[in-house]
Length: 79
Image (tube, rainbow, N blue to C red; front, side, top):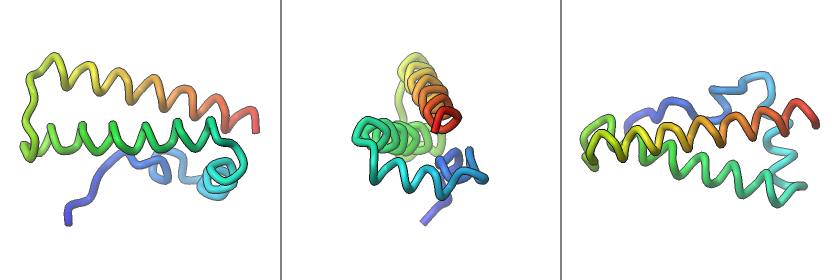
């Protein structure tokens, strides 16, 4: 099994416990984290050629991942 980069625990290593707590206590945060996870996996599959997609679609996935990461970071900062 290959390592998938950009997982939330890697992006926010000092916030791992807070991420876990928010996933359990905040349904909106849990949905954002799950969506981030799914999109991050899709980006990784595209990058590694497991599920190739056209460049524009990959760029859109990356933008969506970045927007989700920004929203997650905002929620972590406010928590």
